[in-house]
Length: 69
Image (cartoon, rainbow, N blue to C red; front, top):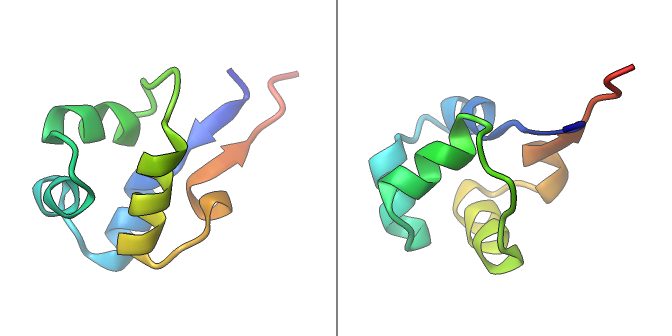
């Protein structure tokens, strides 16, 4: 897939861990870990909205497009 989830980098920049972010966003640490490790196939816009709100970032900071060719 050409879309990559850059959540681990943004989390490191904000110095926030998986458990803390999961609690603030309202999802399980396991589901957040799936996103963080780029194994997710989809993300709800409401979840992305909450993540961006907590991390004070834009969706484009988390989701990036990389051409695979």
